[in-house]
Image 1 (cartoon, rainbow, N blue to C red):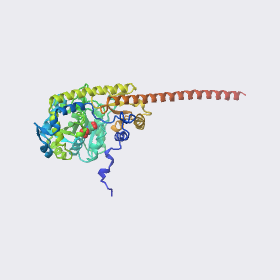
Image 2: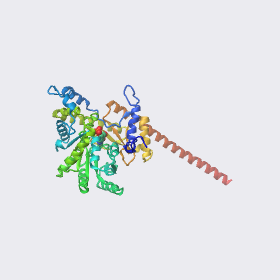
Image 3: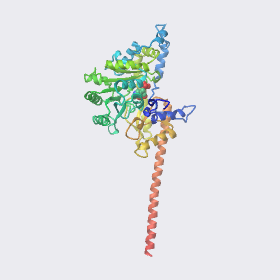
Image 4: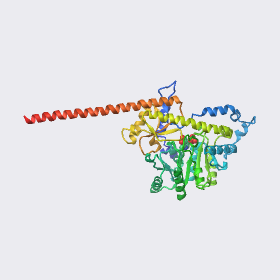
Length: 463
Ligand SMILES: Cc1ncc(COP(=O)(O)O)c(C=O)c1O
C-alpha cells in the first residue's frame, strides 16, 4: 500500500512538462545583473512587473488602506474576524467596476454574480468541479496555457480534448477544428461538458475575433454545453484590434443572460499581483454561483487583501490612469522584444495583448520534429541561458514555436537576452554554413577522386 493516495501521486499534474522544468533550471542558476550576470534569464514566466511604481505611488498616498483603517479609525478587528465566503461587498463592487472599465464600459457586471477565489487557478478548478463529472471532457483550443493540465484535470479527473489550431490561419479557431475535437471526444466515449477559451490567449498574445466568439457561442448553444472564457489578460490589450469580451459578444447577440457562459478573472496579470491570490468566477447561473461559493471555502481571498484592493479599485481616477499607462508600457516592451528578435532573423506571431510573444523558431530546428524542438530548447536554456517555453508544453501540434515573456524583467535584461540570442543564431548560421561548405568540398573531392579513379581504371583497361 502506498504512503500517498493515488490522486496525489498520479502524473496528470503535468509537473514534468518542459514549462515547469524550465523554471527549475532557472532557479538553479538565476540571472542577476550584479551577482550572477551569466545566469539564466527567466523568460518563461508571465508576470507583469512593468507598473509596480504606479501601485506603490498609490499605496504611499493611501496608507489607511494598508494600515487597516477607515476614516482614521482602525478596522483591524473587523477585518481579522471577517470570514464570510461571499466576500466583502465593497470589494466585489470595485472588482466588477474594474472589469467593466477594462471592457470600455460596453458591458456591466452584477456583483452578486461574482464568486471570489484564490486566483484564476482556483476559479478554473472550481468551475470544473461544478460543471463536470470525473471523466467528462472540456475542449480547449491549442496552444494553451500549460498550467491547465494541472488546474483543470488533476484533482477533478476532467479530461482535456484539444481543438487543434494551426499557423496556417494564425492559430484562429475554425468550425471544422471544433467539430473535429467534439467528434474525437465522442469516439473516446467522453461526455463533452464545455469549451474553455483564454481570451486574450496565453500563449499567443492575441485577442479573439468576433466571428470566432460568435462561432463558439453558436456551437455551445447548439450542443447545450458550457463555455468558460478565461479573461485573465483582458487588461493587457495594448494594441488594436480591441478586446471583445465574451460578455460583449453575448450582448450583441441578445444573449446577455445566457447561463451557460462563465468568465474567469484574476488580478494576477492586469494588476501584476499574483502573490495576492485574487481571482473570480462570473456567472449568470445562480446554481453555479451558489455551488462555487460553497467551494470557495477552500480558497478564499484574505479580508485584508480584499479591503486594500476595494479602496484601490474604487479610486476611479487611479484605475483609469493605471489601465492606460500599463497598456502603453506593455506595448513598448512588446515592440522591444519583437524588434530584438527581428535582428536575429526571428519572427513572432503578430500580437496585441498579453505579457509574451509566440515566437517562430521553426527555421532553427535541425528537423521538423518535437525532438528537435526539445534539442533547441535545451541549447537555449543551457548554452544561451534563457528560459523560454517550448510550444509542445502548450500542446501546439507544430514543432518550433516558443512562448517568450517580456514583462517580468528589466529592460537591460531583455536587451542582454536579445544579444545572447543573436550570437547564438549567428553561431548556428556559421555552423550551418561551415557544414554546407564541408559537404560541398567533400562532394568536389568525391567527384575528383571518382574522376581520377575512373581515369586510372580506363588507363588500366586500355593497357
Ligand atoms: C490563462 C491563465 N489562466 C490562469 C492562470 C493562473 O492565474 P492565477 O495566478 O490568478 O492563479 C494563468 C497564469 O499564468 C493563465 O495564464
